Image (cartoon, rainbow, N blue to C red):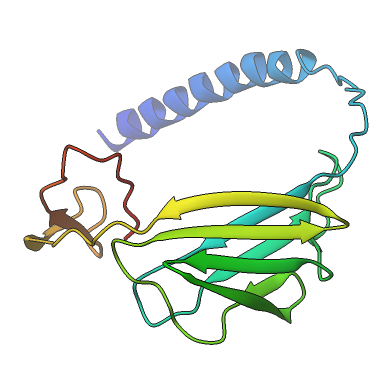
Length: 170
């Protein structure tokens, strides 16, 4: 009886080995190297603005875009004139670190509209955003992961106001 188990195991192993010997070379034989000639593009300015109602200052990150295959590092822009307007006030943001501009103190107030003006080499870029009121989380619960016993899934329940296009970050 022990011999039959060993023979069955060997024959199954041999069948898998035979399949691998047939399939694997076919996968390698289908490989073809393709050289894509992408045109170089003139770098553009990338301006990202962050505003929150938490105890954080307003932040603007300014960098330059790169070619597709040149993914080395961000190219920060440190010589921009950055201003934020809200209500009837205007505040200049200072260059805290390379390409990162911040306000002097936290200013994010829900319900206000904010305008960001960035001037680089005599060209002004403008964006406006509304800081919507926060949506209250009604329920938080945890459930074990179906596939990993050492993990929990976190679920949040809240009512999304249907009159605004909202996006949430948790």
